[in-house]
Length: 355
Image (cartoon, rainbow, N blue to C red; front, side, top):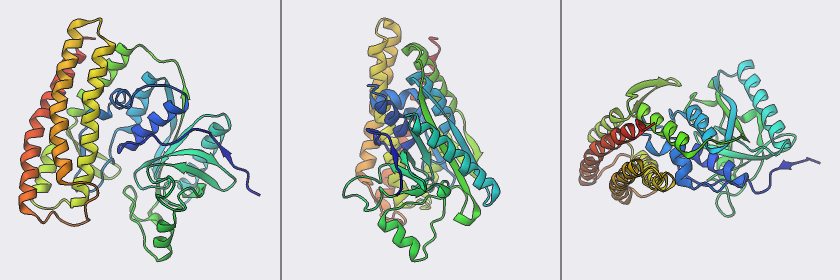
């Protein structure tokens, strides 16, 4: 009989940017009452703008290790493995290292989470394990959502996106091979990303804010970079690449909606985060005024993304955006959003000078 070890009350907190959702979930598990906006802001996720060259890999290329490091300002010490390997001994060694890390943590009541475990390029919570593998919880989980998603994921499948739900297993049995976003087909290897989150002392809000805003300003200037064999665009360069893909019709409607969802969520939380920051740091009147002004600015950005979200509600088909008028309206909105986001990043950098 299998023996299952599980953490009670450790469940996914939501969020399209699921690595931030995992951080929020860990904080909830520990009984910390930080708002979703505060978590999104302190990790820097609220201000990121990143796309891949083909506009087909949302959330790939995010600076997650840096975001996890910023989580120390939320009272978490997040550590783990984050490495790709070819199939064979190298991948097996990484999987074993992660398996031992997760089991040791869960035995101590410490939460864990992983990417490319059951969902491609999504972060899932690891709330338990037995002799054969992991038990996860994510946006894919829950009663009535995906039958069988609460089944075990063999520990040797970390990095291979092995979902135990009935629908995903049926596709696999029918010979469908899911191309992984990091390493191509399963036989090409895997991306092993598993972390555990221990509690630690947290600094004051002012220190946390300074680190988050400097991070946001730095990534707004990143431009073009490579990671995991792909080319990515950050900040203004990301908007330029996105606009090009909409103009030439190369972006699928599915990914158009996906990127819009991520960006609307991010900027909505950006406005809420800056409002909360102004309240927390109200004793510094000059700083609070700047934070409030930045919050109002990001409300404009969020509002425009909301109109885009209404044009491309979840979920869109995996096909080109055939409606030329809808495509033109999307271009016009993105052209309005780009300079506003650029102004927002400049405001954040200016505010960061207060420290």
